[in-house]
Length: 193
Image (tube, one colour):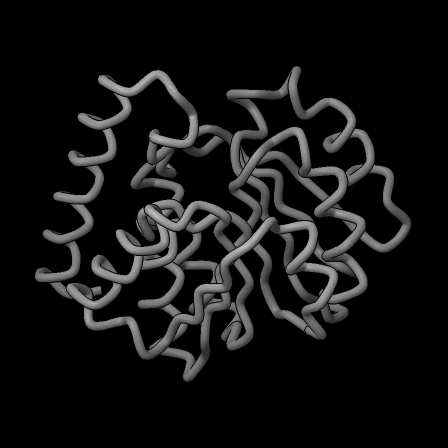
């Protein structure tokens, strides 16, 4: 992570905060992860040497840039899923500004539909999309996650009530070992055993 990229991420974080303070409609909000969550993702990708990374929920590519910069250092790639064409255009522009557009593939469409068609296996999956669908995404992702791979879900503490079913399932899933990490909005981190 160089100073230029850190400065871009700072600008994108401010843009997201400013935008979200004005916008009330969910499709128009950026709903970015926190900077600490970005740092955590970057560290996990680098530490695990993940090369096949899947992100569910691109938005303006704030989290994608954290993942992609780390993936660039591991020789990896990020596949990211987004349904909103306006956010996809913004994500493409932000990834190009970051010099990371060659490391990322954005797939447009509803995540449940596109997930079903992805072969995997993935080393790391990051969920940060419509929380009501996390449980659906979990069941689609686990078969595509390699043994030893990690599943990370955002908003585990900030929206714990909304994610009760997901959190219950991820903690009791026979193929996963999970823990809640109180960074940012809370990250539910699960290892596929």
